[in-house]
Image: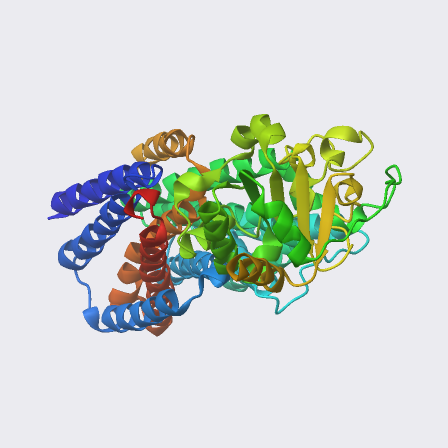
Length: 464
Length: 94
């Protein structure tokens, strides 16, 4: 029986691997998700069927309650709310691993050193993923200010908390090595400390990270929840947990790395830098004048355009303007223009955020292009429309060596013949760096709510 | 502990890196939510904890809560990914 269970778990692992691979290609992504879900089903049924001595009562209660919550949440969530949703799902995965580690600790009378070590890791990483995701959720959903929260000596405090957690963990491992040789009271306190440190550390780790760095944090937390599951696999000596958890852990790290590269920053800089909070206006003062434009005047320029590039950013998500963008694009296409959408990898609040919103508005994905593809053709673009994006189009990243943004790959809309910037005000972006794009000769600022502006432009097209 | 498990761990990390290395950015969100659902595999450990009455009531409570949290992760993750991927369309249909 036990070997059949192992075979089933190996089968599930293979399905996860194939599913993940298929999920990475547009043509096979949908099937890939189902293959991976099938793997989960196999692992679930194999556990229920083969695991000896299971009482199903509480398992079923947990499955029914969890499935109901998960299904309702997945159905109800708006596409604009997807970053928060992903954060919450991440958090529940981390929490589950933490609870599994805790339960295994409570269940065993005597624990061998290695499982004790694995339990400490499971609880620490699971807890970090759980409360870190909750703070990320609060920030992403606007229930908490998205600004970085920092104080003097923050790194020292966080380092001290981590050290206390590791020390308490070491006590547990030593206790296991001595075959429960330490006094029971000490061990209980040590475990409680590990638990508390895990939960506090998640909060402390995400507090100093600001809104625009969220894509990196969300994918990193995703990685943590995978590593926590892998650690739980070492606790219960189970191969499918180790394989699936490490796959997720590794893929999350890769995604995190892609995000960091897109911002030309190291992971350490994102985690500890508190970018938006520390930058002072040290870079060269930007010269030029603001040239505002009304949506009606914008129409005359757009009407004559034959090539238009739309650059969406977080502002499009906030204004829920994706449908209005698509409507304008339809009008432009009807008028004979070619419309493309240039998506910066870190635009928005999670990896791929803009792609999801535009897909919701029925934009075909062939029209979405990456910065490297669109930049070489920028001189041929008649109008670039920047909607709620800021730092990812800031020319300072190329021109101003003293700028904190210097070196970050951007979408070079300043080289387009005309550039419209849809924006509420002249406020700088998340980084706090002034944007010289707004003052360039070929830039026209269209102030106001992005959705209202776009709707006005569409109306101008329809009037003709 | 089975030392082979460490071997499996190293190979799976390598495989994960290899599988994800060249993913187009439009798939970043589904990839994240889809892989997130996979991390709900901890549900296996949760069910084992919730189903073994020998550990006493605390273990049952912790296990049951773990099953709830892991199931939210699994069901929510797969459904959300399915929903998002369902929206990705090519222009050919129009």
